[in-house]
Length: 288
Image (tube, rainbow, N blue to C red):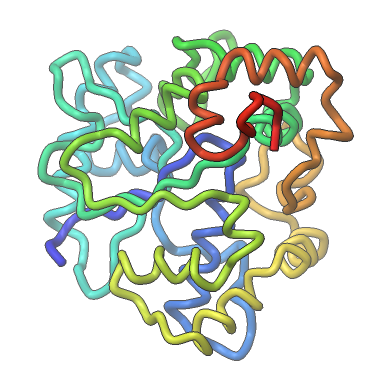
């Protein structure tokens, strides 16, 4: 496998951190679960600290577009200089967009492969509302906004630069249909229902162990109740300040208890074609 960054890509609250912790446990293959607060898989792609360290000056001095235009160069530099002993996995929530210069945000020649996680947007809306500290209606509106980006305006200087998420549907299409990428698309629901083959595909793409005993041990160490236990005991440094906890429920279908009929219908109206593509709607257009 060529050198480069493996992007762990997803819309927020779709299982990205769960996948990262699984990969950490699989790589270490220890008798005890990895510490959720000791993830050493690098910064999220939008982290100012990472960008500033490579650039040698503060991105706070740049406008959003200026910072974005530099990001492909930063990722190329990282791909050339990081060790290739293990896959250089990096979390990213940005959509797979082009900069103002017309270059892919992730940088031409910087990407080794992509693991993209897709999750039912009905459930994403519920998790995102808590994570963002907003109402369900606001979360649904953001997910349907083709120009949606975080961090939002008026919140002061963030630890991350702007992330253009686009709408949920556009985000999914940007990664799943981008040409020329070595890619595996994992459904969050399959990660729950069929963990061994689903996580096994992720491990295979990265050239990591795929033997059933090692996969099963890593999955055991990455169980939701174990992650929630660790967070309850020591907190989780990646938790949003707007949310009381990061590891909420770790299941699918919670939207049925949280969204009313109007809210669910709006999500389907906004994202029906993409939901149908990934099996979230039945033949009659009803959530499945």
